[in-house]
Image (cartoon, rainbow, N blue to C red; front, side, top):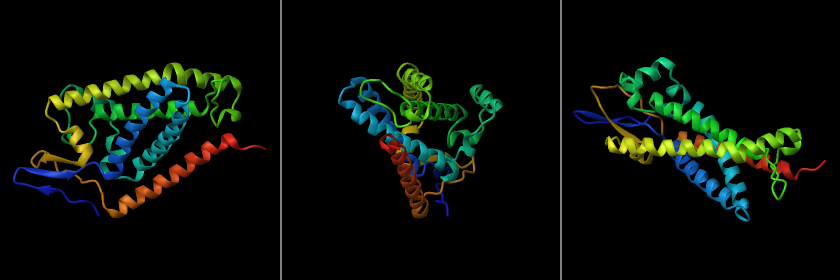
Amino acid sequence: MQTPPASTAANTRVRVWDLPTRMFHWALAVCVIGLGVTGTVGGEAMNWHLRLGYCALTLLLFRLVWGLVGGHWSRFASFIFSPGSLLAYLRGRGRPEHSIGHSPLGALAVFAMIAVLVLQVGSGLLSDDEIAFSGPLTRFVANANVSLATFFHKNIGKWLLLALVISHLVAIAVYVRRRQPLVAAMLHGDKTLPVTKVSAIASRDDARSRALALLVLLACAALAYWVSSLAAVTF
C-alpha cells in the first residue's frame, strides 16, 4: 500500500523519499565525513577509519538492494535516463517527472557517487600500507593488485570523492538559491507539486516497507561483518 498524496486546490503533497532512503542518505554523509577526517589524521584514528569503512560498505550494499525493492522514487529504474533525456534537461526541456525524484543531472551525480564510493571502499578492503593496516581481502589477490588498490585508495579515489562532494554541495546551494526545497524533502520525505503539472506516484513508506528495509540492512551488516572477519581467518 502506497502513502497517498495530500492535495490542496493547487498543489499535491507527495511522499517521494521513503524513511530508509533518507536515513541512508544522512548516515552515508556522516560516514564519508568521518572517513575523510580519520584518513587524514591517521595514527590511532585509523581504527575508526576502518570501522567507518565497514559502515560505509553496509550502507552501500543496502542502497544497491534498496534500489531494486525500495520506494518508487528510490528505485534505480525511476532515475535511469537516456543521454537524450539528459541533453534535453540541460537545454531546459525537462519532463514534469524530472522535478519529483532525481533529475537526469541529479541521477548522473548519484550513480557517480555510488560508483566512486564502491571503488573507494573496495580498494580499501584490498589496501596495505605496509605499516599497521592490511585490508581483509589482501591475501586473496596478487601483491601487484594490492599495490594498485592502495595507490588508488590513497591518491586517486579520495580526490574523486572530494570533487563529487564539493559538486554536490554546490548543487545544493544552487537549489537553495532557486528556492527549491531539495534539502527539506530529504528530511521529511515529501515534495509539494502542482497538480496541473504532474500526476505523481507516491513512494511506499509504511511499517511493512520499513520492516523490509531493516531486514535488508541487517543482512548487509552481516555480510560486511563477514568480510571484516576474513582478515582474522587462518588455514
